[in-house]
Amino acid sequence: MDKATVFYFYTQFYVNKLLPTVFLLSGTASALNAADGVSPSPYKLTELFGLPLTNTIVTTWVISILLILVIRWSVGTPKLIPGKGQAVIESLIDGLKGLLEPIVGKKAFPMTFPLLIGLFLFILIHNWSGLIPGVGVFGNVDDHGHLTYWMRPANSDLNATLGMALVAMIAWLVISLKVAGPKFFIWELFGNKADKKETPTPVYILLIPIFLMVGLIEVVSIAFRPVSLSFRLYGNVFGGENLLTSMTGMAPYIVPIPFYFYEVLVGVVQALIFTLLVAIYIGLMTNHDEEAH
Image (tube, rainbow, N blue to C red; front, side, top):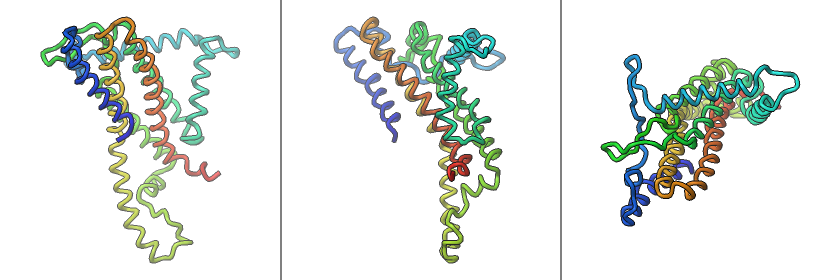
């Protein structure tokens, strides 16, 4: 169990058990504080073309459109001598390029970088969207004691994080097959990694079934990657939403301020972790030739 999972469970225990108990004993708990916290599932607002329209979908659309408009407005028409907005975007791109290119390798970088920078910016902005006044603040307590509200950060919905994880793993498969090739891909999973020239023939033959079993274990590990990616991000953002909700309900003006700064840091860290893990998964398949040099 990694630190993010441990932190999530401790946060859930703190928010859902300790805080409501303290509030009830003190007699000062409001309806917001007495609730079990933010609902783990999104709140259905209406239906669109027969499909449910949830508060996380609305927030995703609004924040994404605003992000596109802000970038277009700040960059404008790219110039040889960049303005302030263009310089900020270029600095962000250069920083991520220097971090990610050694991981995925030069061959895979051109087709991988748009995916990775898109994931990083999308996750970062939507992690921070929960800090915007009006997002995750005004709501009602439902029949199950959960807080429901119209605007909710996308990454506090398991559907959103699982969708991103599945897209990332599909991209991992396509990029790995395109850059490394099917033959190397299969060998990397099931091939005998022993040096045939330096290994005695009987030992080399005995190692073949062992590496096949290791490959099967690796396939199971790959199948669980979307689960670990999605639950890690969802757990941290959802736990942060509950933490901010409880702190704001207890003392809405001063006490929550340190926790807001903390969530700013958590938003950056979680976006970076998700992006780096996807880059590492890709680099494990595409960066072998360059490591030798």
